[in-house]
Length: 439
Picture 1 (cartoon, rainbow, N blue to C red):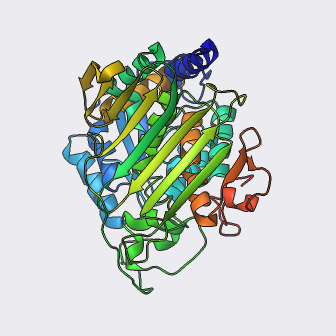
Picture 2 (spheres, rainbow, N blue to C red):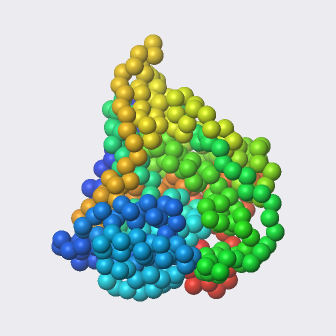
Picture 3 (cartoon, rainbow, N blue to C red):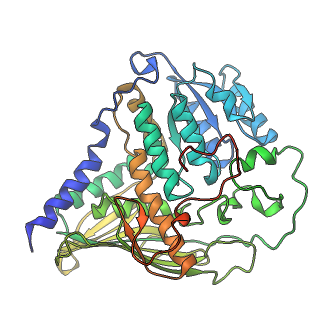
């Protein structure tokens, strides 16, 4: 086996592992230079937002200055949670513009629906705020690139909510792959197996009194409210989500790409996917099989492949883990569950190493806060989030068009006989204040 693939792999994974040491020359807040508490805001107070909030309230170095949500009930609950923790009462607002215009705010946590992730994060970068934004980092490929540009231009830290990047056993697993424990990793697999619920077939209706549906829609095309759009189930609608591949799936896809050692977009994408199980209003597939290839120089040993499997109707353990990864090397295999641990098998299926572990959201928060102080890039830097989210976007396009895609990683455009390039972005509501410039 040529040594070139190993060197390329080591370079790729080492670059990711060292990302937190790369200086951004951050100047967005004086808190990066002193020890005063960071003034932060939570934008989006639903399930994941509340999880962030509870963790942040345990930190003395954090001051919750704002909570923001378009649902009045959630907003009230979030503000009450801050107060009952013994903290000063935060400003509660339904409009994120109130947060961003306050120069005293150092950083924001964004836990909104997917269609708001990049638009809100771009606005925050432009307001010189550091950003922790939930995954997927974007609703489409173009938005991800615009967010990278906004982060770099404004010299702010952007951390994506793929907390496996800060989870000890996952980081250890990546170090072992980097060391060559299973040889050259040529193929990686990610899978997402669980049972979602049927969202039914509903007709438009009046939004609940506590919801500002106009603000909730934001820059997405205007449409009538219906009860199976939210909460949570917006991710299964084209205008608002990325499907389950961009929800839970992107966690495992990100780990697969990390361990595979690829740090560009793929040049070929093939996927099959549709609704096998749910007869309801969901627009995304509940069953997907997606393959991504990086051709490299085209020589044997220098190509890489990533496979993603999704079954939203099959909550059963696969290869030891309900949702997980497999890394296939020339001298062994690694099986990994991001919320459980990993096992490494060598020749003759000998168990070489294993480790247990759990998600570590607290460590991911800590990494973000440390980077805001230091100016270093975070474990889940916006560029890493963009590359992984783009795999979900490209797979969804391949499923919708029922064709093999050829892609130019540098131009971030389809090449050859391709679908319309407009599928790499989206339609926005004309003239809306949150439409990213250049989208």
